[in-house]
Image 1 (cartoon, rainbow, N blue to C red):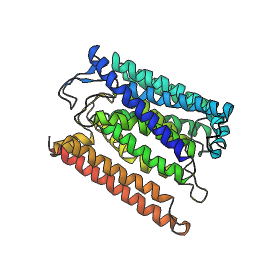
Image 2 (image 1 turned 180 degrees about the vertical axis):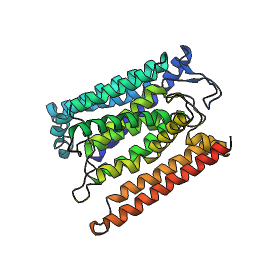
Image 3 (image 1 turned 45 degrees about the vertical axis):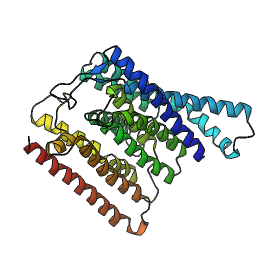
Image 4 (image 1 turned 120 degrees about the horizontal axis):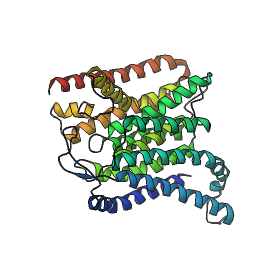
Length: 362
């Protein structure tokens, strides 16, 4: 089944790669660009529309995968390995759930695209995200490890909205949001293979392929931006996948909370810190600024690439801790988890110290 994953990755990667160049040209021709201002790091107009390439490549890859599944079911070609047919029933069983996820993704992408084109009131964007999250809950896509249903609904909606906006807020400097998507998804991919959740693994490979192709053009100095259409879409897809994931292991019930918290610690922490600073300073929550961790690192003398690379490395550090959880022995589990969480807390404390230093270095 490794071949299926390779095909999924390269289909999304090549499709996104093929779409980005014409998207850049069209965006410039119709003035679909992000103009610089005092709240932005770039100094010249950069084409938007990268999110369109990502969205189309992901949808096209899923469509081709579904068509291929129907073809295999009908034709049963002899050259296809027998093991593939063992998974076809599982593919068709997941189609209704996939349809729900992609319908929600289309709405989130559309909200972002309208915002990129014309600008949307932030509260309308937030309302749309909440409604999509409730649509998922209505269709039984929700966190299930809380026995009280209303608590489960609130936490599901809150988690989806948080991760969507965490990746939206990460998209403030070249290569950060798309690169973080590749890193975080790769860590979740390893966990998916560790726990035998192959359909989620293939889902992640598609997202990694599309994001990696875009990252080639988005690395500093970026020649195209994904815009809200891309960052909201990727954040939504990742949020939904973490809900579908079965992190739970019978001897270790805490994993359902611990694993996504560890993998997504850096983007979530940066989001909460930025929102906290805006609240403290009495500024609008949804108004962009230069208070993100990457901006503080640049103020301390790092280049854009160096600041982004440091955030990548810190994310790898917290993510590797999540991977290690599944290697722990039951008899030492509590002590080991305590050590891992202490390590992550120290990393977040280091970030806080650097942010404070960057704030003083204005």
